Image (cartoon, rainbow, N blue to C red; front, side):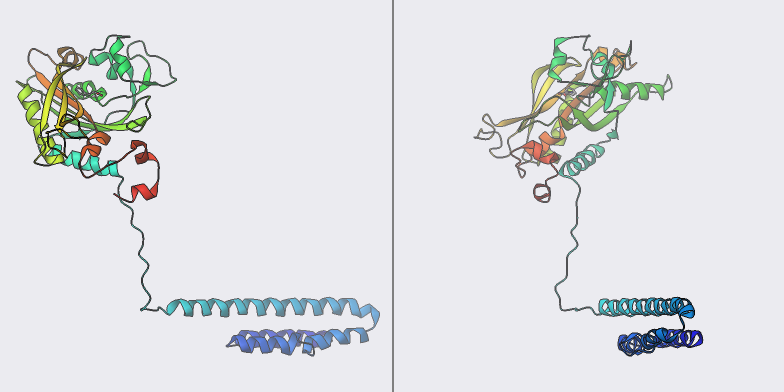
Amino acid sequence: MEEQLIGIKNTALSFILEAKTLHELEETKLQFLGRSGTLTLAFKDLVKLPMEKRKEVGMLANEVKTAIEEALEQKQLQFLGNQKKEQAKKIDVTEPGEKPSLGHLHLITQAIEEITTIFEGIGFQRVRYPEIEWDWYAFEALNFPESHPARDDWETFFVDEDTDPKMGPVILTPHTSSGQVREMINVVKSHSAEEKIQIKMLNIAKCYRRQSDVSHTQMFHQFEGLVVGKNIAITHLKGTLDYFVKSYFGEKRKARIRPYHFQFTEPSFEVDVSCGVCLGKGCKLCKAGWLEMGGAGMVHPNVLKAGGIDPKKYTGFAFGWGVERVLMMKDDIEIDDLRLLYSNNLAFLEQF
Ligand code: PHE
């Protein structure tokens, strides 16, 4: 009986191994495990054995059965896998294709790249300075005495860190002007005493202020220009503004400067751009023909001093504008709520 069982096992396994189709496999299964299959019949014969042998031979019969079942299952999986591969090979070339969806750079990243290219064209160099900043770089070094009321205009976030005796508290930088003195210190450090100091910095970075409504987000971007050298005058500032406005907004748009006040520039200006709809005549959108773009001015002597530059020898100009704001002022883009830019809303973002 034992020999018979081993024989059944060996034949069954070799049949399974050689089966060429699912159908052949099915037949082998019937032949051994079907109602009148060889192994099924052998199980029936077990009762004929004397009691003491029955248990032992019964166990062997079960082992044979499991071995055959497992081999059948494996071979079946192999056939099914091949079938799938065959199906995958058949491509219907007449079916319309599926377009892979393509992403693109965020609207603000696109604007930053465009602004960078424009300023690089006239020799500015892009730099980046910390977003988590010392109060000293953002205010103190920019000629804001401690607790000066003008600081309130930069609704600043404070970081829960120890205050430094010289640097003051840690803040989230509320404007890119914090990079001005950092840049001056860096440039002065890398200059020999005889070399002329020349700075043409473009600092584009995230800024943070405690504000949130349709035209403000707590996190936004500014681009800051700083030029320092011998005999730098307001005409250089005005020329740079005109160049940017024409390159970014188009030939028909104009820039103008109005007197204003900033602690870190003297004189200070607010820069306006002629409205893209009425081109300066006045309309519903702009009211008086001009749209406000941001601040600018001649670098205050105290700021040059904080950066280690002698204000008797050098002068400079600076400007700082919002990336989101200039983007909204391009005539072909209308965004009702600035907060949409950072909402991760694909339906909105995919339009650009
Ligand atoms: N930092 C100013 C602001 O955030 C803008 C500015 C930059 C003004 C440089 C003058 C010079 O509004």
